[in-house]
Image: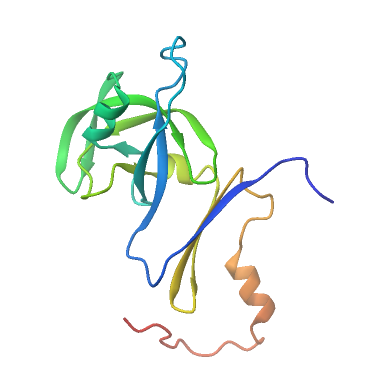
Length: 172
């Protein structure tokens, strides 16, 4: 039976083994902050980071979107601990879904990366990284499906009943 819920998904097929999950995204000032403005999205490069609790924007995003700080917070990362400005933004994902009123902090990101998508957004949907003939495939869907990907169940269906001893299967 089909659901009435529309699942917005995207897939990125990288040309080889990806060292980072990088996609396009868009940032806009929420209408709640300034209802007189027409919502305008600005394009940026985003990295998806499952090790980050919250999403982060670089200083160039603050400038380009004309953001005003909404507060300050303490952040911890590879550059240590420090106090930074926070902002409320709308984030457009590659699947044409807009996550509204996201509290982001300002931080220093890698060269050519403007936005870090953290677990505050990632855990809202279905997130999958897979390997197809040595090439990384990254997909994401919002809202999540009722039947999430379960690699254990999938493996139990195809594996023989007897379990072999632990064997190395990946070489770097």
